[in-house]
Image (cartoon, rainbow, N blue to C red):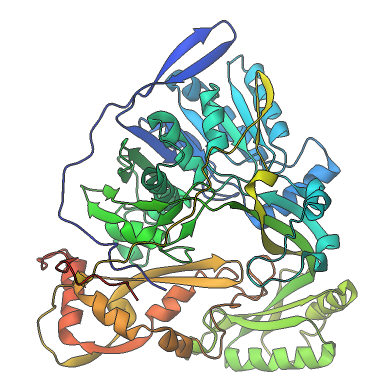
Amino acid sequence: MGLAPSLQDAPATRRVLGARRFCARLTHPERVRYIPAVADLIRIANAGGYWGDDLAQFRRQVERGPVDFVTLDFLAEITMSIMQKQRARDPRAGYARDFIAQVEETLPLLVERGVRVISNAGGVNPLACRAALLAMAQTHGRPLEVAAVVGDDVMERLGELNAAGVTLDHMDDGRAFSDVRARVSSANAYFGAWPVVEALASGAQVVVTGRCTDTGITLAPMIHAFGWAPDDWDRLAAGIVAGHIVECGAQSTGGNFTDWTAVRRFADIGYPVLEVSPDGSFVVTKHAGTGGAVTVRTVKEQLVYEMGDPRGYITPDVVADFASIRLEQAGRDRVRVWGVRGRPAPPALKVSVSYFDGWKASGSLIISAPDAAAKARAFAALFWERLGLDFAERRAELVGHSACWGPLAPESDPPEVLLRLSVRDADRDKIERFSKLVPAVILSGPPGVAVTGGRPQAQEVVAYWPALTPRERVKPRLVTRDGERALEWPTPLVPAPRPAPLARTAWPRPGGSPRHVRVPLAALAHGRSGDKGDTCNIGIIARAPELYPWLKRTLTAALVKRRFKGIFLLHESLGGGGTVSLRLDAQGKTLSHALLAMEVTVPRGLVDAARRADAGGPRPAAPRAAPRGKARRAR
């Protein structure tokens, strides 16, 4: 948990400058072709981090300033399962239809300015997505080259892969794939940047893919524009880091930021734009005049989001070492990133499988004062007793009192709470009996109770199953105007060395009073949390370099475990993950704040150092590497 010590600020340096244009446009009677040329800077804008993100951002990113590429991420495990069901009902469905409308609204600008678009909106049916885009463009009389990357969908190849010795057993806990094989609803291998690079080289202005990594769709235009080699591990890793920063849209430009009161205008928040140089360094920024904020802190929070091992961020293209990243504020709403190191990519591809895992339902009741919390608990106990059924899982949460933080929530006497009752089980009949009873007991319990939202509806539970396959077993195919062709993986499969030991860092001393005071952890650090399957990741970042050694000593795994005792361990913390969990906060988004609310005892000098950093006042010199011969592996 936390941020590697070398991910730190540095003295300010020059702003990245350079020519914008990187391609020449050649006109043909029926097509527009884009030929990559030597580039000294490209601009890549992100316009969406999930299916359901602000659809207006696509046009805003194109029209509010110069960009060369726009990327949009639509896919998650539950999304793939939904799209698979849509395609089963209609062979022309199975992709993000919203994407067609976004391109249509922006089509004149895209053609006029030569902006190229990359998205995994193809879902489980990239070919249908491509056909819809072409039909839309033809309706408007606009030439549009569209390429589709296919081959990631292995739903119909599961038997073939098993027969070839690819077990697809659970990559984290080793469970046998045969346990869920009959209930699988989707299965897709994660592709990376290289198929998209081929699509761009074909002249496509719009590239749609299936299950491509969020980072891969951002790395691809860098490879295409700068000619990076498949074994240029450091530059490829820099592109992955850039993709990770912008893949969640406005999360890197002030959205979900701990110090949210410092963010300018959430209503008009700008989405991120990358200015990338051939050496792999880049600036994170946003269009002028938009709200939000791009600071070292907002970027750091996105860097620690949904991260496992910071020294081994694994993608199909490269393994990136997040401990090597350097950051600096390079002007208002401009953060420069450089120094990223990478190691060879893994020989296997990750396969994301979704499978049916029973049913769930949730119902809510309003419980009013006096004694709203006590009445809600009494009502829940009465409800479970009257229902008289055992479930695989059941949950009662007091929304507005303690639903997200559980026993960590401070005591309060709210004027009302929302009692949220949830169940999950393989037996749909039990779920239906639960649903019927929720509105049936409001007159036979404590006073001040009202149903809201009507009778709960049973929902299918779609669970997530990660697996691995040798990359030679799943290869991409590219579909363009010129037809379909198979692609080979250019990534060399070479042994990956262990990451180099981190140099011991000489951290600045805080000075000031040694007298101890008690403060919430938020006075010393900021952070972010999110889900990785059934695991909650919490990233904590020191507010000033002087605080890092204290945080490292103090914020141990044992301390965090004690803090969350009574709720869960952070592994298996989310009740099966976002699609399975009955928790109100199924993705663990609020848990960083539960940790930051913890009170700690700390020397007054450290509190003062954090306040100076918050105010942007005088600070000691940035941390530096210790003298040679004292390097050691970071613990």
